[in-house]
Length: 571
Ligand SMILES: [Cu+2]
Image (cartoon, rainbow, N blue to C red; front, side, top):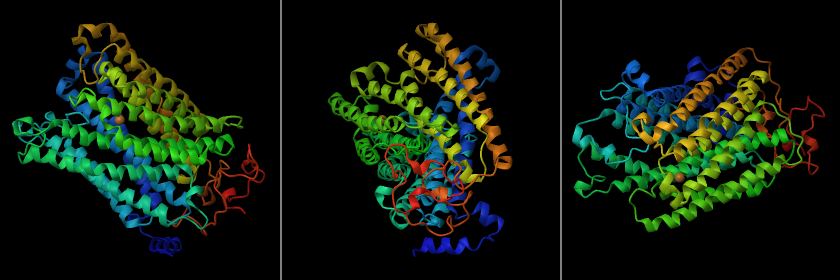
């Protein structure tokens, strides 16, 4: 027995940990997952509400300025910068990897905990520290960072001219701490999956979400190194007076763009893959059918992961880099849509001739699929260098990445949350509120982001703070007003979720072990699982996606609702 398994087994019989060790300094992966979830949801509120100041400014610039006074262009830049930073690094990553990765990996592979439970605890606490640093950065002189979430120099290296600008320094520090935290998380994800699988859980019996989580962890760990080095160089330019990125000292501003996007594109998949993995699990359960093309999905995931390292300069077609580089990066970018098209095809084929039911998690999984298809298709436009010349940095791009990231983060995140809520909290959510939440979110999401494509094609650039100052944008103003109104309705659409989430946590119907009649391993543990997860570690005889009969699987049908063990564990 490994160390962690021994600790888990010991702690499984030792429930009397004090308050601090149970809820605050816990080494239990499930508690750590909930800590990540709470921090992620907190930041989602902060980063989400920031958009309303931006949208107000964009729709009614004349009223926003006098009322608030402070939606000056500088403040607007800060809002844009911090919204992007928060949503990618402090919402998507902690929720999709920190919360779901931590919660699901040990439970779904049949382990008692992560391989390094204390490292796991350290990871969430370093993330908390990083969150605090980011919070503090709002209150230093000059306010938080405002150089865009990509922090391009020479703008971001301006401290050498203007003195120390603490907002941006703290922004760099917060990101560095967050990277350290997720490096520790990634080490845990990978080691746990390699070493702590239950007997019989071969790699090709792993649930797809696990494959996608560990691929995401590998992508993150391989791509973040150059960015950390780049960030140190940027900090030195700002504080020590070096000129790595400043042309007047012989530096090269483009170097940062290369280092940033060498990380930035894989980072998109670090978010996207866990999201798609969750949607896949949910689709499989509520289609009552094996996943179509299980191995093809795994190979596609790996192919997309490898290709993601050779597409980065598609963000830089207009940056002044050698234009001959545009062609190879266009080709690799369009190539990378192939594995994703394959995964989407597998999702649709899984639905084909299935006996589909539509509880809330399934609605959100279908939302993930449909929204991702549109986001993926507009990506092909962006990836083509000649087209990108016209749409680069416009709201078309803003619409594109919100379609992909909203799909992976919001729709898949909600699919996962509604689906695993019974396992996390031991209670069921309310279906009526869940369905209302889905339909309102789906409708108003599209009302917000579909028109953005047209605003972008009309020429509106992404960081314009006052569209009324540009004559050619004035005819588009009604559309900006429409988007703002729709975005307020999108915010109000989250009320049913908030009520549902807190009410169900306390008052929801008690959940059985396996309320969805699902087939993966976490459902064989009690709801919620105790410290140590399983009464006895199960032995696995087949993949969760293999059934006795082809087509509609009989194992799925609730012949006997008292049978707790998933089919994957039955001989
Ligand atoms: Cu990219």
